Image (cartoon, rainbow over all chains, first blue to last red; front, side, top):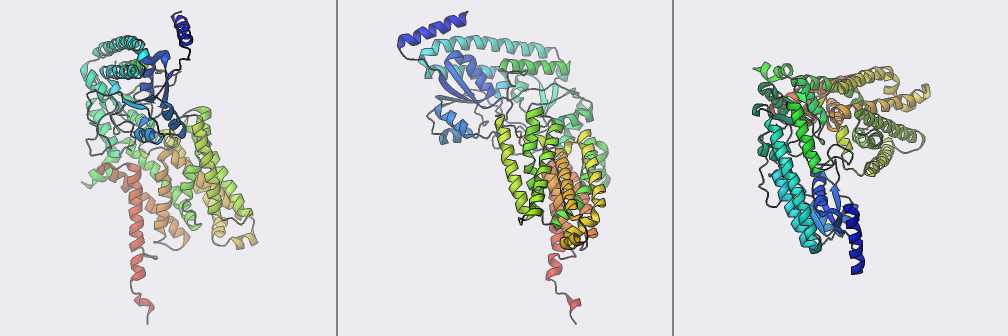
Length: 297
Length: 289
C-alpha cells in the first residue's frame, strides 16, 4: 500500500520536475556491503556487487564487465582493512570518477592473531569487522552519510531508513548475547576452517580456533592439523564448523578423528544466494547464531 | 627418539596413516606410468591434463552443483576425450604427440573457463576439485587405491606390446597391430591415474609424484625394469620423508613431499651411477690402457 503510494508520489515528482528521476548507480565490493547499501538506499539507489554471493573476496579476479560497471558508478563502497587489495587498481584502470567509501572507517580494527606460527600475510589487520554487530552499525552510519552527501535530496529517506535498520541491529545484538548466555562459557569453543570470526569472538565471548590462516590462500601443513586434533582432544572442544568457502574435506577429517560434532555451514564473508539460508546480513548473523547454539547445546 | 620422530605420528593420528596410504597407492601406479611418460618424451603431459579436465568439471558443476563425484566424472571424460583425439591426430597426420595434445588441451581449457564464467561465479572450480593429502576421506582413498590396482594390472597386460611400441614402433607395426590400441590404453591409464590423483591429493602432488621419481630413476638404472623399480622406490621414500618433514616443520604437506622428491632428483643428477654429473666428469681410468 505504502509502496504504491510512494511510487505514485515519485512519479508525480518526476513529472513535475520534468526530468526522469534515475536511480543512483553504486558499487559494493562484496555481498554483505551491498545488502547494507540496499537497506539504506532503498528505491533510490541501484547496487551492483563485484564479488557475488558465495565468491571469495580474498582471491577475486575482476572481469572487463566489472571495470565498466565501476566506470559508471557514482559511489564505490569497499570494506577496507586490506580485504580488497585488487580494487584500487580496478578503479584506476576503469577511469572512474567514483568516490570510494571505506565503510569500515572508524572501526576499532583488531590484529590478525592467526599467524602465531610465523606465516606472513600481506595485511595484518583482520578485515572481517562486520562480524561484530556494533561495527555493522558503524558501517551503516558511514553508508548513510555517503549516500546523503552524494544525493542531498534523498537525505531524509536515508536517515529514516538508517534509523530503522540500526534498531534492527540493536535487536540482533541483544539476541546474540541472550542466546550465547545460555551456553556455559567453558563450552563456547568452536573449530572453524576459516578464521573470520575474530570480531565475533571478541565481542561475544566465543573462542574460535582455525586450522588455516586468516586468508583462504594458505595451505594447511600436517603439523597444524595434528596440533588442532591434539587440542580438540585435550580441551574437549565440542564442535567443528564448516565454512562456505574452504575445503570441507579437511573439517570432516578432523571431526571424524576427534569425535567432535559437525556444525551446520556458517556464512562469514559472503552471503548465500537469494534462496539460501543467509540472503541478508541479518539472516546471516541469525543463521550463524542458530548453528552455534545447535552444536553447543 | 627415532621412534618418536618417525613412527609415532602415524600411530597417533589417523589422517597421517591415511595420507601415507594415499601416497603409497599413488607411488605404486605413478612409478611405472611416469617412467613411460618420460621415455615417450611426454613429461609435461600431467600439467596439460590438469588444465584439460576443466570443462568436464565445470559441466559437472553446472549440472549437479558442487558434487565432487560429478565433477570428477566430468573431468575424467574430458581428459579421456582430449587424449583420444590427440592420439588419433598423432596417428593419422604428421603432427607430433606433444603438439596435438597442446592443441586440444588449450581448446579444452578455453571452453572450461568460458563455462565457469557462464555461471557468473568466481569460485575456483579446480581448487574445489583438487583435494588435499591431509583430507583423504574413505571415498577418495578407495578411488586412489582402486585406480592404482587397475592401472598396475592393465599395464602388466599391455606391457610387452607397449614397450616395443616405445622403443621400436615400426618393428611392432610390422609384426602386430597392437601398437595403436596399446598406446591409447596407456594414455587412458595416465588420465585415470592423474584425475583420481587430482581429486584425492591435488595437482602438484599427482604430477610431481608421477614425474620426479621417474626422471630421478633415470640416473640409477639403464634398462626399463630397473628404472621402474627405482622410480617406485624413490616415490615411496619421498612420500614417507615428505610427510614427516611436513609434520615436524609445518611446511604444507603436498609441497613438502614434492620438495623431497625434487631433492632426491638433484642428488641423483649429481651422484647417480648412470650418467650422473660426477661420474661424467671424473676421468674414467678403466677405459684407458
